[in-house]
Image (cartoon, rainbow, N blue to C red; front, side):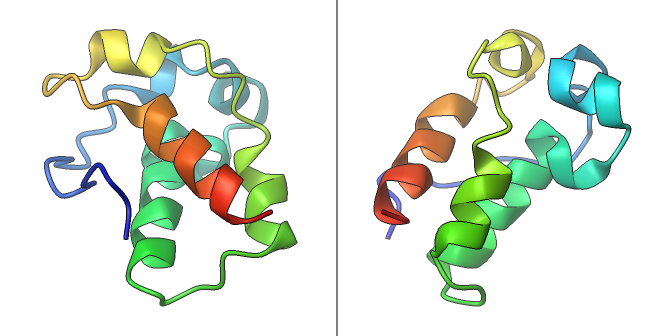
Length: 88
């Protein structure tokens, strides 16, 4: 289980336009909201914490722009790092 819950995320996507990875790809998978969704799925064991997940999450450059704009100030990068670490 993740130490930090993704539950407070209301999936408003206010973070997406501030994400460098999302801006360059316009792919929801490579957005803070997409990363949080993957973390949520991995945490509930709906997807495997494997190298494929780690590869997707490695696209996040951990700049924390998403956390700055998040209305709930979720520790998004912390959650991503935690799942990345568990994938090893």
